[in-house]
Every structure is written in C-alpha cells, then in structure tokens.
Image (cartoon, rainbow, N blue to C red; front, side, top):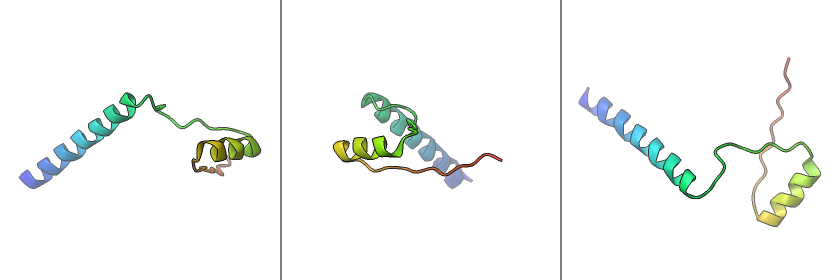
Length: 59
C-alpha cells in the first residue's frame, strides 16, 4: 500500500516538474498543427526538427 502511494506521489511530482520545466523554456503548451505539408517540411528542415503526421478522419 505504501509502495503504491509513493509511486503515485513520485509520478505526480515528476509531471509537475516537467510542466514547470516546459513553461520555463517558453515552449508552447500544445502542438501547433499546420495544414500545408510542403510548408511544414521547409520549416522542419530549417529548424532541424521532426514532423508528426496525423491522419485522423472524423466519421
């Protein structure tokens, strides 16, 4: 029981620490979704970053 409580407490504190670290770096708190793949590729190459593609089709 104590082990479970400590695990939950550690996970909670870790998530708070990550959130505070992200806020301290002036990082946006959410993903900025773009609509034009060609523009995104140019931006990603210039910034040296990866691209996340989402193929969600609402039904």
